[in-house]
Image 1 (tube, rainbow, N blue to C red):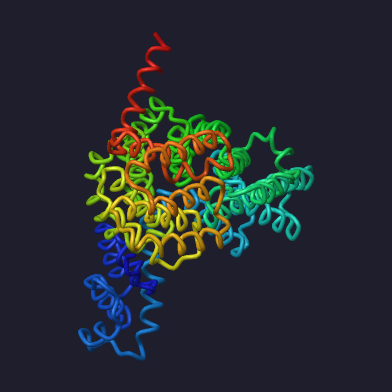
Image 2 (image 1 turned 45 degrees about the vertical axis):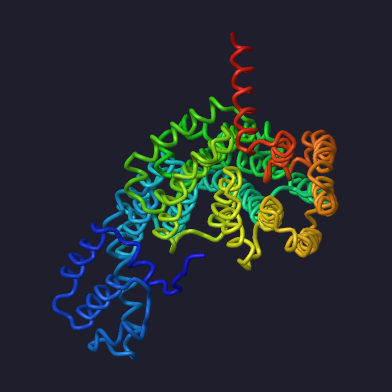
Length: 523
């Protein structure tokens, strides 16, 4: 796992682009007027910019003009000035910053007693906010408008009070719906980050409780952008967690469609659009919609080259995560595991480059996918190396990945013939998965087979592989049992053992057969 600096100022300095650093220096030249304190924060900025890792002792030693007792205040001052310079540089790129600035102007005019000028700006803010679906800012504008109208005589139109009251009621109603839907979406996503897919009927029942909220029914006819966005997200997370992939696809498509029908929102809510495209690609992958999957990757890859991505560090990082994830999934779908190994050095390089920004969940997913790539290509030693990174990491999220990493680790050792180690691993992994309530029929059958396989000769093994295959195949269609097959293609592994072929050859042939059958059906 990457080393992470906990110093917020150092992280901010390291995140700056060249143009942002230059702008900060110009900004400080304008405001400093030769002040000694300001000169010192520029020295502190230069020192932090040159550091690879934050080390306060080394910082003070190399910069004797920076006194230890002053450092805390200097860091706070530098942090504030960096954000101020960024705000000036970026305010035209972000509708939130533009609206904030105009609201500040309206308040300043009000404080000057220039009520009519303030009201004119507030009207312009409302128009801009409505055009860009920024409901929360309309609420702030109305609050200030009411204050002006209730405290001062502005000689506004006679029905001003009634109109303001009606606008406030409408905005409050919308904000209530948006708040409830966004809360529900967040809770569902949080459940997934902790647990992964639904493990059993108990999990499904707990998730169904989320969906007994009236707001889901009342918001079905809502036309507002954010109401629909969060409504579709709620259904996406629920369907994904419960593995209803057709429903998942439908709502992922609705999620992306609301951006396609209102393209300016792609720039305003870029992160939500990126996430929607990621989920749409994942839905096509889960349903094995190969053509649509490739088309979505192509659309997303072109999108990553646009200015809205290239000019924003956060957007660059998010598109890297999801584009690489899609490309890895493409190799899994096609059965081209060895071919996909070219991505590993690039992913490792990017993980190091973005180490300050990538959360542990994303890194866990990358390690599991890389381990699966190596396992599929037949390099079980390398697979074990990446699985160990997951197993040795003490985290309280994605218990599903923790469990299946251990199961894949067990099977990789089985492939290598490490039978002395396997007896211990079997007990350890079984206990862990039982503790995490992650033992379904599929896992129980796999463990039972592995326990018995140690005593069998190669000739006796083949019928046992065939028996296990016949037992597991029907379970693929059981939604709660199919969870295991998402993380580990145990069916293809068993077929590879029976046919004595590499597992990627089995998966590749299935892919080619499916493509051929689909082509025949369309002719």
